[in-house]
Length: 484
Image 1 (cartoon, rainbow, N blue to C red):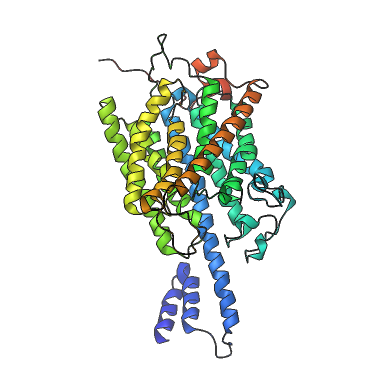
Image 2 (image 1 turned 180 degrees about the vertical axis):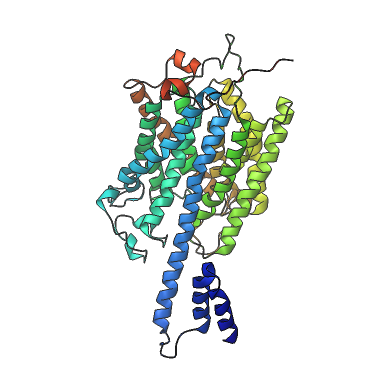
């Protein structure tokens, strides 16, 4: 008690520290003699409130980290593109999240998590989030009814919504890179809105909203299929329908490299995404109660990214003759994507195997898509579609034997589980792929034959920054190739 008052006297002489010290001292003194000891029921209620509050902070923080990944995507995509299209790419990455926020709130959320009798393919109740639902702090009862499929997450409904919103924005952002440098700005905005309504939420309902794929035993912890492959399928379809950039292929059909203009931005963007993935994957637990699981997911995520970075670099060095930085960056992202689905259900060694394979795969995938004239300036199709598919299949191979009563996939093929889980994963991958390709193609063609899809050849050659936005990213800079 004497030490407490001495600390208080010192604090009074330091104005900036006065209030914190007073509060600390009062806390140390403890409750007055008149204060009543809380009953066990009151203590239990307070602990429950604190638990929900802590889980909510965790979910919101992880959601903010995933939101921050928009910066990473913007830097990677603009760095891999040419200087004359920088403003256009940055603007697309900026506006896509705004568009997704509105349309996912209005319609997408209800389609994805709405309930209703026979809601195997899309939500039938709670379709209009704007109409309101029980948004009181989570107590379990807040999820009864329309959004019962997410009753397992004991955080307030708006926290769950925010976390899913940033995932929806990620799926839409994936498309931006694959169609870069030749798509009309308005056309991309319209497609992003459609994706937030008729693509991402529908397949998301199948897997995370209690739909038919979940019932069939398909598992995807943090979004290899729901987020990455959906974005990848839509990106690939758009790249094909748009056609390659002018100058990408010579008269003989030979691939002509179009280097990115700013590898520093691409490098920074990749590190931002790597950081964001520690919100993307561990945050999908929606709770902090199991610290061992959180740490396991984070370590698995990092291990896959690290080994994929190395295997992609080595593969590019062998195949291309040089350790290409672009391949190194895409290798890191490939590992992050591939571990997204199985991160909670595999061990460290398995994570290294999954990431290592993804790093090799992405190099050959980028070269393959170039050869078949699917012009993807940033390799988004290879990273998100290719490695998202690998991650889903990895569950059927590497999933560990689940604990009794645990909500987890059956043991994978390499852990004595046979083919059951692998077959379920294959069916899920095919179903998501077929649906997304068909629906995205319809959306792309509707846009193409209404408002138009591709800019004119003159605008593409000059650069979309001037044609679409009226200014460029490096005004006043003279970019000339040095001689000698």
